[in-house]
Image (cartoon, rainbow, N blue to C red; front, side, top):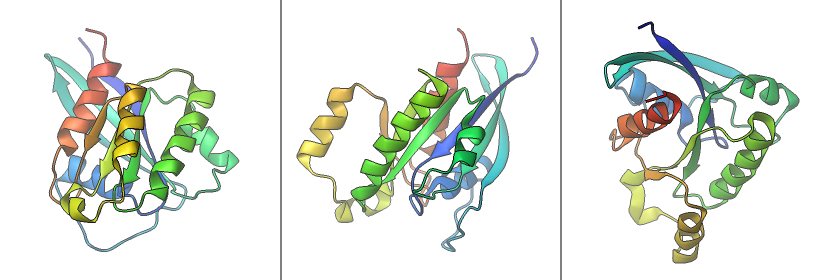
Length: 167
């Protein structure tokens, strides 16, 4: 049984934690220093699901809100994506929902998981009951993650990976 390779894109506006989530998942590190991603940064991580080796190619796309044409080309060939919003900044959820529509239009119905990042700052979250009700009504897989503490980061990538590998 050979290694299965899957391309996953990280989608979300600037400063929601896409790069930090990838760094936490791939290298087990977190940095307080904010670095804007220009274009795309690609990392990879190998893991095993039910005895099947899988290599995830993680495409961390720029968080520019003006979703450029070039981003569409970065999306092509993706097997799935992680949609990332910052719980402390409600407008980032609206951007994530818009990016989801763009991704679905480009890729079709591919697996994805919505990550509400910065769970370590949950006291500062701007999401209200109606936001939660709306999200739950969508029937999506939604996780509260923290790139800083590592909370549910591995789980997020593994859940998406399991949706990409035939059982």
